[in-house]
Amino acid sequence: MGLARHVRLIREEDTTDATTTQPAGSAPVPGGDDETPLLRLRGVSKHFGPVRALTDVDLDIPAGQVTALAGDNGAGKSVLIKCISGIHPPDAGRMWWNGEQVHVRTPGEAAARGIETVYQDLALCDNLDVVQNMFLGRERVRFGQLDQESMEHAARETLSSLAVTTVRSVRQVVASLSGGQRQSVAIAKAVLWNSRLVIMDEPTAALGVAQTAMVLDLVRRLADRGHAVLLVSHNLNDVFAVADRIAVLHLGRMVAARPTADLDRQIVVDLMTTGASTRTVQAPGTAG
Image (cartoon, rainbow, N blue to C red; front, side, top):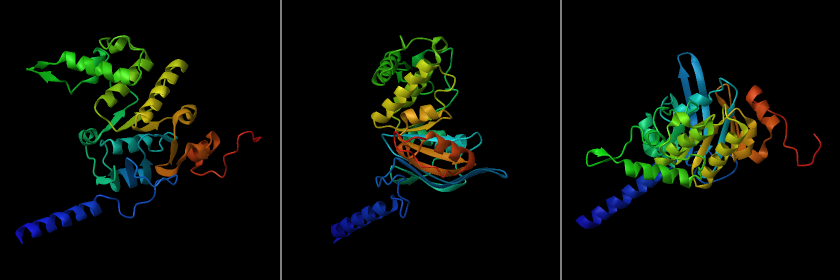
C-alpha cells in the first residue's frame, strides 16, 4: 500500500508541474505561429516615478529568428531590453522562458538562463586583449592559476564557429581593433557563455559600410545556429536586411509585432512616429 501511495503522489506531482509551468490562456504568437517562443512577455509595464516608460507590452521572441525592435527616441526600447536582461525588473506583467513562467530580477539571473546583452558601448576594455575581454569576470582557473591555454582555445573556437576571420590573433589588444572587429568580439563574448537569447543594442552604429555588412552577417549566422536574436536598431535598412520579425514601440506601447514580409519601410516609419498606419504592403512590381 505504501508503494502504491508513493507512485500515486509522484503522478499527481507530475500532473501539477505540467499544468503550472505553461502559460495558461496566454495569447498566440504574433504571426500565427503556435510554437512556444523562447521568450514571451505579456503586459510588461515599467515606470520611473510619474514617467511611464512601458505600458502593457506584449512580445514574443522565437528561437532561430532575428526579431528587430524599432522605435523613435524615447519609445522605451532601452528600458524593455533592460527589463529582459534583469537591470530594471518590470513593475507589472509576466515573462515566460521556454514555456516556463519566470522572474528575472538581476543580470546574473538573466545570464544564468542564457540571456546575454551586447550594449551599444560594447563594455570592452581597450587595454585588455580579446581573450581577457571574453572571459572578464568569468576567468577559468586551474591549480590556483589562470588557465590561459583553455581560455585562449575557447576564444579561438568561438570566433571560428561564428566565421569571424578578421581578428588576426586572440591576443590582440582590443584598442587595436576596428569598430566591426570590436562588435564581433562583443558578440562572440555573449555566445561563449551558452547564450540562447542575444540582445544587441544598435550593433551597427558608427560603423562603415563594410563593417556593417560583416556585423549583419554575424547576426544572421547567430539565428541560423538556433539562437534567438533581439536586434535594437534605428537603421531600417539593417532591420529589413536581417530581421524575420519586426516589433515597433511607440511611447512605451507595443503597436505592432509582425513578420517582416508584412511590413515595409514606410509602414514602420508610420508606426514609429504615430503609432498606427493605414498603408498596406505593395506587391513586387506595383507602382507606388
